[in-house]
Length: 133
Image (cartoon, rainbow, N blue to C red; front, side):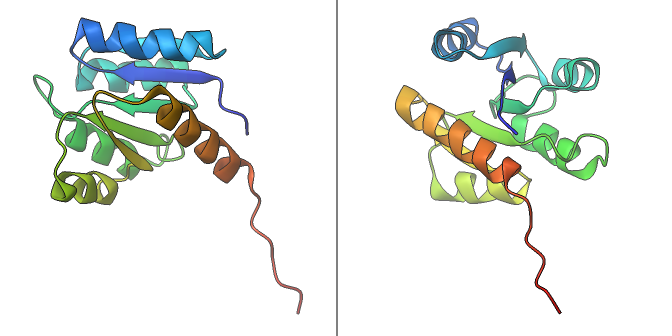
């Protein structure tokens, strides 16, 4: 499945603008949420094909929201890429354990972001091959 609709979840207006600019210039449809609660509402209403998730936000943090998405049968198929200023390896490992498909450190490199989105799109499109008996 080619990814087209992306939800950006970040409490920073600057970061939302930066990521939106990169994505729109590359043909993606973008919506935004400023916190985890709004993100969960938008995911259910808009059905994005990918979520870019900040970690440090008021209310539920990005790790908590990513875990909620991964554990919800209705939402679990929506891939999450965490985009965070938290740059320790333990943060990356924890984010992946919560259900994120990738973990990018801010400031996000545009080429790295686009490559990650493309890889997830290819991964999602791949159909499992069943071995013949």
